[in-house]
Amino acid sequence: MNYQDIAALVEENMKTIFAYALNRVQVKEEAEDLAGEIITAILGSAPKLKTDAAFFGWFWAIASNTTKKYFRKKRSLPTEELDETYTDAVDFTEEIIRKEELSLLKRELSLLSREYRECTVAYYFDSLSCKEISDKLGISVDMVKYYLYKTRRILKEGMSMTREYGERSYRPATFHFTTIFSGAFNREYQNLFSRKLPGNILYSAYYTPMTIGELSVELGVSVVYLEDEIELLMKYGFLTKTEKGKYQTGLCIFTEAYDREFYRAAEENFTCRLGKILASVKGKLPEIRALGFNGCGMEENRLMWALYFNLLREGCDHWKDSCDIDYPKTLYDNAKGVNYATDYDGDNGVYSSNAFAGYYGISEKTAANFANFGILGDKNALDSEHNWARLSELVKQSAIGGAEAPLVYLMSTQVDRIYESILAEEIASMGELYRDLTACAADIMRSHAPKAVENEIDAVMQSAIFHRTVGLMGKLAVDSGELKLPSDDLPAAVFLFEAKNRSEGIKGNVSN
Image (cartoon, rainbow, N blue to C red):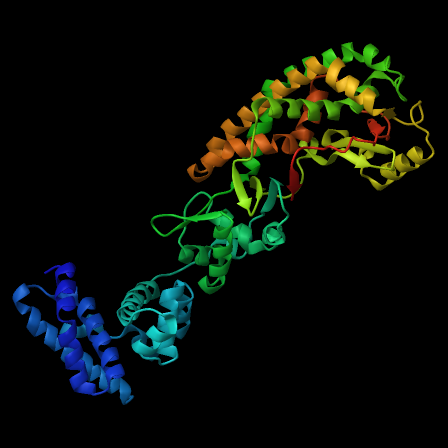
């Protein structure tokens, strides 16, 4: 006789079971508890029944044994050995307590999901009846009994297992979150990953979906503390629940392995292309110098460094404008954008850019743009205390241009003339380079990321390509031979411009 048939017979005889229990204990609430115990015992012993004909004899034997045990428990008398027929139906929780295995019980209770945990604690630790639990939790009495029955099976199975906490329980993963968005600022959203736990939940469930119990063991954190975090992650779409009740991350993560492969591919495929663009820019330097801006007489390499970051920025914007990229989804309220994370610490050395700015106000009349290309090293960085203080002082003294400092200063009309007219062809070529660089990055990410985030990859790469590759473009420029590293400790070059009506920067907001 299979389990489903027995369950069906039990359901048909529910009233009979309750009447039997009520006849024994006289009190309705206690009868409900006893009936629940009988049903649990019958279902738990189902595999022992060999023939259909023996069902009712076996049924009433279990009812009788369960009732005896119920009264023994009430009188707190020592548990006597039951008939073999009911061996598997012994209350497992009582057995655990009798054997003083409370630590294992607590461990398994910590892994139960909310509904199972609340019913079990209320019944066994708070001594509430099934009816009282039903009223407290707002669920039916039958559902309470079901949770209690399922919990016994879960606990019994879990108690027999050796559980080992995962690596994340003692060595949290590195998780740096970035959002590129337009719209209102949401403090809860922006600060979500200021704690280690949310990021490690996403990291753990990135490649393989996990149940909340599996996450609990992996992270060494009780389910009761994970539930709120998971609810918050699901609220903002960082985590989804699969049909099988498991959770999986819906956020693209840039790994160290991905970056290494991407940098190798970029060096092989884009160094020469970038070099040709820069060589073309050099060919137009006489026309640019003819604009007569402060610093126009600067030596070639310095002037190229001054022009380079804007060339990158204008080229990337040209590509994005041409393909009409739009943020694919709403992040919260009226904010749209994309998110991604990085799973390792530290910069990427020559591939890094610790800071860059399309617009950096220095005074009411003067702004700068710059990039601290990692390949330049610390001595040429613009955000070091020494160099930035020197730059600010030079600007204040109006000592702009000449041999003393690698500074250029242009009026807004001169800036427009360079990037909208003189270098229009080179900017279009740079846009094509960014288009192909983005496609390369997306193809490599598809081989590193799980299928769950496949639909996110193109949007993430299109939005993040500039921010994540400023340092790489500095490295490729030097590798191409068209730009050289400075031989002194001054900034490579500083691009200053008239601040009036020139406040635009990289499109979108970026938050790390």
